[in-house]
Length: 304
Image (cartoon, rainbow, N blue to C red):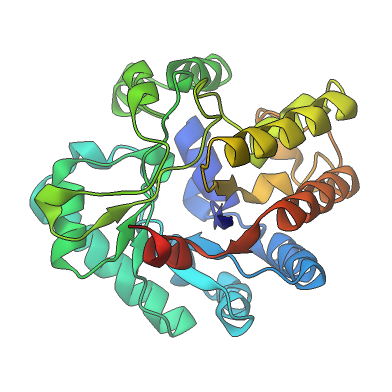
């Protein structure tokens, strides 16, 4: 069975912006630290994955070497918007056209790659977003997150933030509605948008609880045995249910409290970087031994 791996390359400033922290406007970055770290791990494991990149990061010289190295290593490059605002559903059609144009231009200029896949920040999307993707020749979208726990994740985020009422209103569907849990866990075609495929972020079949690495790492702050048991059980349950995982990674899965103390609000950040790298290598190694792993584009092309 096949499994795809993708990493939403959210930068330090984008976490701060979504969280409502001051200082994000200076665009602090951890790319020079985390990108080589992730690429070295993927090389050791002989894995090729998809990196969803934010256009605004491509426009900043301090990030460009790290971003080029991703494409140079043979990984797929996807579009993660230009401004990384998880309220794309509030954008007008003209705003979406500009957002995609700027993101594609920046990503292609920096990496030399025109993206064929998209994931909305905070899993945000709308019919207008899907229409733009179809018109711009994208092969797949990867913005759906079929879980009942989205509102709980959003409540946790709000509880640990300093957001104004306006900012909370912008983020009121961050991580999705509870009804998203009724969505498909398998790839499908958006028939009203031509041949555009959707590759959902995989959640535990039937139960629809998250299984991606950020959640497993958070469990490891309580018990590494519990985290490993949950991960292995999730992979087995996917296999038994013939669900080919689309497995999600984030930069903070590879960074600890000793690397970026300013992001201590994020779950799992009580672990240090070395501990997180050990966990990531163990879990991704297990995944590779369980599935034939590849990129999101491969997953889309293999889907019916």
